[in-house]
Image (cartoon, rainbow, N blue to C red; front, side):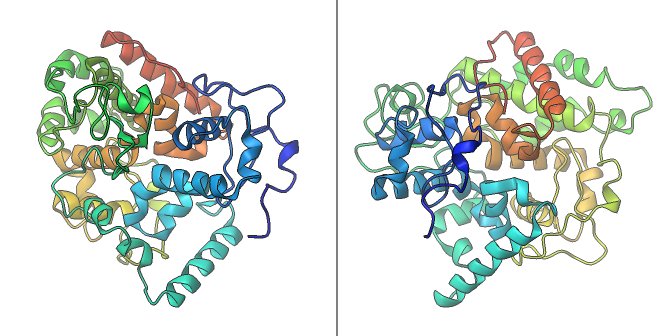
Length: 396
């Protein structure tokens, strides 16, 4: 609690001009402020809209009003960190600053872990984060049959729960798709407008896999029928909001799958077996000696905490038999849909750029612009094929 503002933050550019929903105001700076060091125009804009101040026009209020300051921290936490909290403290580090992970800043990661362990000791618990807010833990740990659309809600009576599970006021929250609260329209938890199988036709699927080389092992593994069978366990995928929203979600999912697998060419990550995807700080899902948790399947599921949680939810031992994701096409698609519904669905209303950040945040903010451009290209192509506009905020 020493610092209110980021050291030398005023000299840094935190304006993402691709986020047209929350355009930067000339002369205003969106560097780190407050308990969570809120950064970037899209966070200031969205937080301000939810909390009730002009985050774009007056970002400095986060450093002037202590209550607003803590509100921005709690807003960021509930929207960005809460969805992954059941997977252990390591997942919260990735949600707050993924740039520190995978050995990029082990000193900062160790410092965060030391604080966390200290506070767990003070509070008399070894699993404070995992046990806090039991409803979310149960869902994320897989003790419910599927994640609920409103897992981030529980809004006060004067706020609406949006179609994507966030609390707030105005048409973005209380308009189309509003689930709870003083909605402007009848709450809509799911829609029956879009038949996902009717959108993901054999021709659409073949149009993707047909672009991979004839010798690709994935061509003999992935199939539309396996996707549709897996879809039966996630009936809300592609069926929330308007018909256009549904088609955009389907286009986004397959855009990421196309990139991750090279048009369904790859089942396993290239060189993955030589990489260490064991987060030893995650004691809830401990690594099994001799097992590798590298990328597998349509979304290239990685890390022990994802294999453990996905396996518990789907019904296989993801820690002891992670290789099943590369052996059973239905399980493979189920892990991709599990990851999507738990990690990507909560942010999909913020535009395709937010889904890139959720799938691989390390590519964002200039981390790998070529890959970001590829993902966007696939997405806009599939939106065109499905007859829907891609919307704004495409980049991250």
